[in-house]
Image (cartoon, rainbow, N blue to C red; front, side):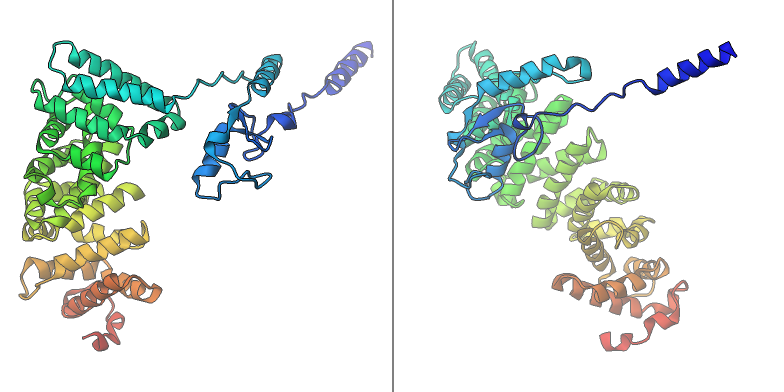
Length: 440
């Protein structure tokens, strides 16, 4: 009995043990916008204190430049660091460390336009200098620019606002003109800092699009370090996108650029580089049928088709866009028709990825089915295969749910093409073709 009593007392003691209460953050430590603990508190002229990241994000979203609480006018330059409340928050974090609260770090002082301008002056001067120590000075200044820009979005915006992209693009051009190893050294350092300033303005993209700069970008994209190759592809995308792929604006370098981009797509180094290369190649192929033919001859079409099998939304849309652009050339259509999976993959991607992917798949199918005159031609075989994998039903559904006018026209024309070969589509019920005569 005594033993049972002792066990009962132990059980009662365990049951009555205090339960830890979740730590509550004091209300004046929370940002009025995010309601989270403030890490870098700043005070507006209205006397309201916010977390810097939250209030700057508020001002960047295009809303009226007003204080969210008082609705009084507010500018970014009006925000003043509140060191007193930050120290109190840090002390509170230290006092509650045993309860799992980590001390917030002291924010670094943001760079000023004057400091940024001084660094850019050193970059520009050392890039143009001819003495032996100039590359080292340029590399040191560029490293400072890059480090400060990486510290915070505020620093990056500060550099971008004073034309850092133009200065770095000009420095890259000067260093490329100076000779040396085009795929290494300070060129990759400048390039790494340059991509931090993206998106580039038109002037920076124009400077970066000079023949010497493009030669360096292509060399780095093909033979540089992994980080350098990624940055080179991102820079090429900026240049090509700014001129919408117009080969006349690329100083005759379109072929070299296309070859470098294809290499990155066929032998991926990272998803970001692959997607950037697809976007850049799309702009080039869309603007010039000759470039589209060149891309097709590199053997990229099978790579794109096979990448679509299990691609995520972002990759699928970019791969479909590039494939559709390559199919503007006869060489591209011939390569696509030869691949056994092309039609099946395009039909599968309809309604499976996004509205954009559906429209791109329809456009690609339309290009493949054009000029299907003879019964044994490759285009005719594509149409027959499309019938067998259910393209007809999906196209009818697309007309019912609605789409853009250009896609609607291609869908209607595709249905007419398919109707001519309905006898060969063994997997399609004849009932699906009733009422199609009005399309003919």
